[in-house]
Amino acid sequence: MSEEFGPTFITVTDEDGNEIALEFIDALEYNGQMYQAFFPAETEEDEDDPDNGLVILKVIHEDGEDLLSTLDSDEELEAVYELFMESLFQEDGE
Image 1 (cartoon, rainbow, N blue to C red):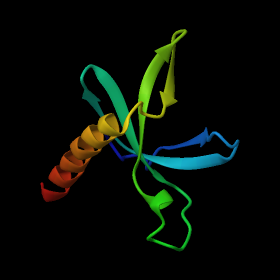
Image 2: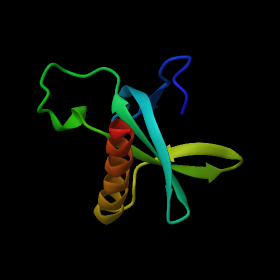
Image 3: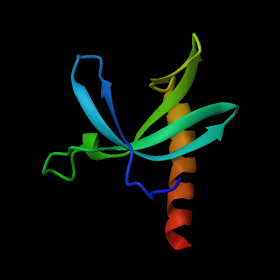
Image 4: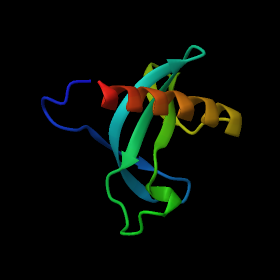
């Protein structure tokens, strides 16, 4: 993804109705499904907070629109997380 124009941000609403700003990091396809990775745009000072890490959402096509959804299982999340880590660290090494 070109960062010629700067980072891309989106706002999502969690299950409690809280709005969260996310910065788009990368996208990839796994088992025929598209996934997108984000980092929280606004983080608390505590770097050890688990909510400050990578956020992975899957892209679902519904009624002609792309929607973002949480993953269905821990196994799916772990597999996709590993792929994103490989991709992100590979890009850093280039």
